[in-house]
Length: 282
Ligand SMILES: Nc1ncnc2c1ncn2[C@@H]1O[C@H](COP(=O)(O)OP(=O)(O)OP(=O)(O)O)[C@@H](O)[C@H]1O
Ligand SMILES: [Mg+2]
Image 1 (cartoon, rainbow, N blue to C red):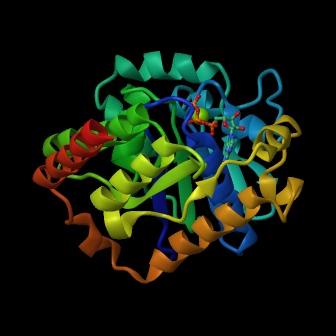
Image 2 (spheres, rainbow, N blue to C red):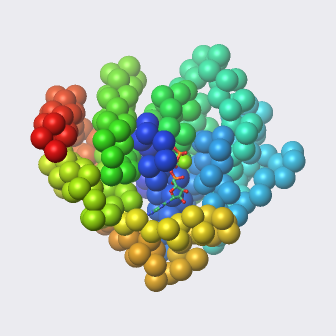
């Protein structure tokens, strides 16, 4: 039986590279021969569109998985070899309001997909909101990647994710561990970038993933429904996400159960303290 890694990509700050990271990690892993399921939980459907998937009228999407009791096999789309997607559209917002009223609303995704073993990786892309769907992703995932752009509020948004995971852990006695914190859209010509990179280094140390440099080619790639690996395999972005993919793959040797137990709330408070100090002196 496969050991499936379930990874949520999240930060409560908007526009910090969550979708780009979920998409490129998923595609990067599939290009390295892993069987990957990308789950789009955002009604903006950027991950779905970013792969060039056009959802037709009446096509089963995430909504049907949650609300119409369809199986994932009826909903899933094969986007690339080894890369499967549960597509989203505006109906995802409706799915959220539907399950919000139901008993066990935070367990829906886990109950649907928690025992699916045909994938090596499941990667979840979320909207930047403390919502029922975010909580579903938290309970479903065993690991989290937190992209942080080079600004104060993105650091805070990342810390807030840890707090919400901590609260969830206290209620449900399960919470994801940090797979990695990802410095995103790094441009070392700016002072703020140096400040944020310093904060992240001190707060997260070995849990930092390789940096993603600023690269305008992502926008052009997304407009064509291509990943950066397809759009320009030699670009900075393709190199950087290649390294992130390798770093995530290298963790496979870790015992996930052991990692589950690390990090408590006091550690998170300490991390917050570091950010406060460095921003105050910057
Ligand atoms: N390395 C990069 N350098 C510059 N721009 C980038 C880079 N990666 C992605 N982008 C662009 O930045 C924008 C925001 O990225 P993305 O959609 O991944 O953020 P997000 O956190 O998912 O946003 P939201 O909160 O709306 O879901 C997109 O237009 C994307 O094409
Ligand atoms: Mg997004």
